[in-house]
Length: 72
Image 1 (cartoon, rainbow, N blue to C red):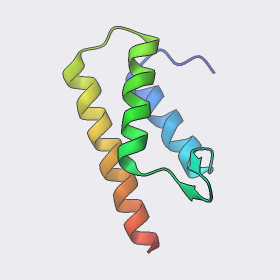
Image 2 (image 1 turned 180 degrees about the vertical axis):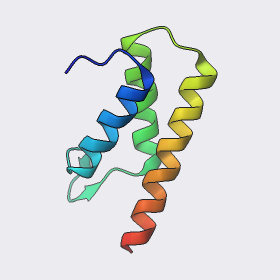
Image 3 (image 1 turned 135 degrees about the vertical axis):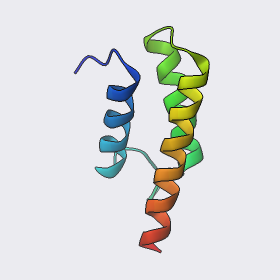
Image 4 (image 1 turned 180 degrees about the horizontal axis):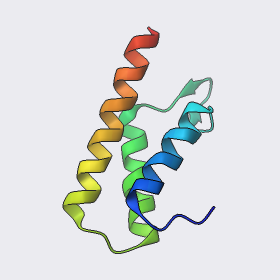
């Protein structure tokens, strides 16, 4: 799958996280770590508005943290 936009990148990372592909030992990575991965990958795939990248990273972080809190 070739990812060329931020929405596809967000969806791909969240799908992969949900599938358990982003772990540290036995635990899924935190929202903060996934936001950092998102920012790095966004910079790797293209020139996007920094504000948009950061906004999406914050949304990913919040969604993951909310999801993890529901599981606890």
